[in-house]
Image (cartoon, rainbow, N blue to C red; front, side, top):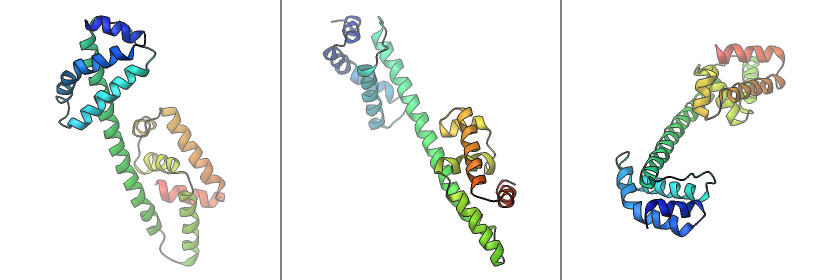
Length: 190
């Protein structure tokens, strides 16, 4: 049976036809995927993900060029997963830097007991924020990223990154007196 006929069966929900296409094109897809990365297990996972998407998608359209469609789709899956892995690595690096910044913040306050008590309150307020808000504050004010850059790192839209920073600052403000909040802003964001 030709690929186009099998594809039409897949469009009608025939999982046997999809399974046949999987078996028929698996080696081709594997070799094609290995041109993008040498990690064979990664490529196998991507092929699996592709066919799971094909199995569950309600938006498949008819095509006469099934082989090209599968190759292009696999390339997109690989590209998306590699981008996601890079983003995750970047985020992990930012979280590691954030942990370092937490301890660096404590070292800002060395001196008398009054300063130490104030520093403890400021640090506790910062650490009481949910992690996503701490990360947003860190990326925006310590690393100096724009909202658009933050959105790319956090995998959210720019408006959401603005909202996240705003919620974090509002939360901090509610936990401190105005003087403490201003001191926090001056020390942490300058």
